[in-house]
Length: 316
Image (cartoon, rainbow, N blue to C red; front, side):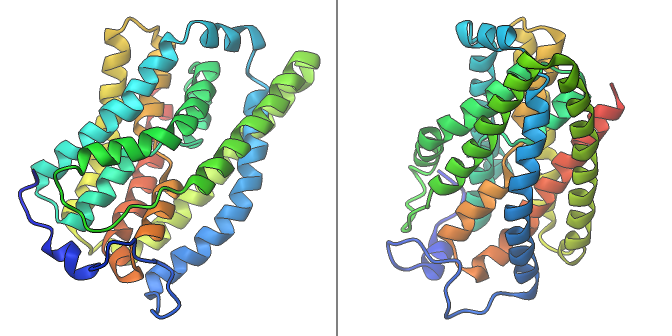
């Protein structure tokens, strides 16, 4: 049981239905408008960019190694345990430790229940991790999110007595899967048929990925300017949450006798969440006024997980 009641949540959403975040009757705050517009642009541009990036990363995947992970999915199983076992648990413990308000608690928990993002695949390549395992884990965690996200949210909010539904962004999950599977499959085929050309494509993709991440990080820092004065507790959690995810993922991989390369991969996959999916779910479930209260956390988590990735790359 959380150390607070749910009166605030009831006051904000009195009906049993999810609150529409994009209601035409309410005016979006300026900060949220900026993110809404940026999110729309990123949805279109990033879908294309991520598709191209995943195609280039697919050129590094070898069919035999990928089939080996599928035949003996021990590494994938450890990664899934980290993703849907450790991350929601860490989120819940942070909620209890910092005595978060109901809305803040839900935002942190949803972030912990999200599947891994494609960001981890790029960083895995840069730290010389296991690309076959990384892409397998991202794909499997996104597919598993269709069932594991609602299950985890149900289990951890069972004692919270919420009076509103949380909307799972199934369409967003489907789009993510399409942006993953199709370009990666095409990249694997290119690597199989034209291995020399695939190396050139891979180098170009790595450079493009680096430039894209720099642009996204820069845009995130600009947007964060007006949110640095938001709840310091949420900003603190957005900083330590991915770090704890990376550390515990690495330790669990180490304890299960994974190779050093796989440990780095599982560590990155564990702490790197699909931030856009988290925002979509919150947007579908809450009002714009409520979103403003937790927007800084979502943006800061995405920014800090990017910075953590850059530091991990620099340290290798």
